Amino acid sequence: MKIEYFREFVVLAEYLNFSAAAEHLFITQPVLSRHMAALEDDLGVRLFDRNTQEVRLTTAGKLFQEKILKILLDYDDLRQLLRLQKAGYESRLCVGVPYYAITDYLGDIPERFEGKYPHIKLTYEVGSPNTILGYLEQERIDVALLPHLTFPRGSSLEFHNFYTERLGVLVNSRDPLAARESCRLEELRGHTFFQIGGAYFSSTWEQLRYLCRRRGFEPAQANMSLMESAVIAVRRGDGIVVAGHHMRSQAVNGVSYLRLEDDDCVREISICYKKSNRGKENIRKFVHMFTKERGITP
Image (cartoon, rainbow, N blue to C red):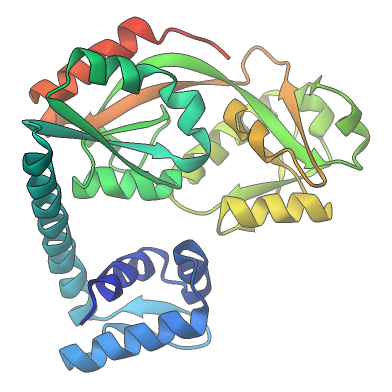
């Protein structure tokens, strides 16, 4: 059985939606379905109950999810350890960062860190914020760079803020606001706001609702499974996306980015890690370098 099938299972078990999982994995839904059927045949059990309404993990699927995560983590750790030893490193630190915020969040800290601690190998996992949160819980990564919001099970995490990020909005380039560089949140009243699925974006949505309610209106909501799908919908003119300053990179091909002028339309970007890993020396060194040397405000 190919190890890629195990990784695909993990993604599908998270999304419980074949279309969304296939889109995340950059494969087609029929290919994902064939791979999961082959995995179930090999194991001799059903991992998913599925019909036209929903996809659910079976009892066997829940057990497999719990055990295969540990197996994949151990396998990946072993591969990494062997490679590190071969390259002459003593240890490593794995950093998780949203794929569209790598430049904004990391800056020049990787070069500084590697220059100061040449015996520590920095490695990276990139993905959506929801995926990064999952990696952190699974201990696939040591630290994550994410906005400091209220996450489910967030009490198990420790946060160290290192800069303030201003919020902005992605609008269709034909929108009357698109000719400007900035706007106030109040001016977005009447637009449809896209809410992205998952734990991280649910917290982002709650922040947005709070900010809109302070201005006397409830944001009209439309759900999207992925940020990429929401950006495509913005391009069609179906709605808008409020997100961090880093999302200005999506302002291409019919999409414009505007900075939100309001003083409260900001959020703190943080380094977070599991409290149980608080004493790890490599994490301490990384946090210290970020919080002392990366004090910027875009």
